[in-house]
Image: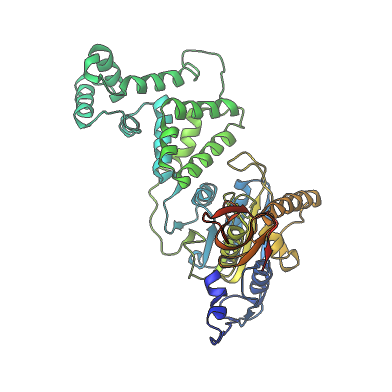
Length: 456
């Protein structure tokens, strides 16, 4: 971005032509986008003008939960009365699709995820569901998916042996493994077979026994404990962390949250939860040309849709909780601007209360306020206390990032009260420090942004 902004300084004879006409979006959408992006400081100061006819203000809805937010989106799409293919739902991260997919399926509305996989079809979610199935039915599909995930050094030869033994004795593959491991322990020496069996059996002990007549129910904590126990004892979550794939970890966190929410029902059981999950995995849906498009904002770049919904407009979601520097926040705001301006006729914004995957209470995104509440139509009034608390949290975060903002660029000449004059060699926004080559010193020094430097 700096290269673009400094281009006319490097080439003073260059002529700058600002493109200020917007042919895609209505004036109301452009107005909200202009107000939003005006909060960025690293940009050319310009304001777009819409050439499309006047329309309606972007509609903002603050929901009580993710599920109610998704249901509202479905209801609003139906109320539009237009073909589904004219509507897109945008989100910041892939894990946000769970509640959306469940709502679309419950409402019998066709949808397609572009540039991604359906939530319950993602590798890590299928793995975890199979581990949970091992605690109840221990079916062969679940067994062969989990026995070597993560690797337990049980290769094709040993899995074929397990399969043949199970077939010849008319038992499940898991029962075959237990009999073989018990009767012929040498077969699985040096493998993780024993640890696998121990993990399954120890977590099974947390479940109510079928022969017991006592009404032992899985409460919220119990369901969550069961899930966490199998993730820990199987080594699966630790394995995912070694992969360092944040998207997969976010999906796992979202799945955990869904388990905890299911556990809010006093009658909740693991079997019941798995039946609920099966409703969204055992579907044979026909591909339809007339369907709602679900996609990340990054995937939507260069696209346009008559009607656009942007969900998850929460602090920590959008902007992402991984944003840590002022430059990162400005980039996140540019992404929000891209999302706003994908809409041609109608723009819908939504967020939800509750706890995020990291357990922190969710507040409306600063981008809602940045766009100007006067530029939005509110589906229902926002609670004043919620607004004040959200703005307080946002102000604290912005003050923290302002302290991290670089005042100088590479190449600037500066003066330090102790080390004297020098040249900025590198600006490290992540570490909030400069690398400076001071005159007369052989070694470059690292100086914090907060240091008292004077530009020469």
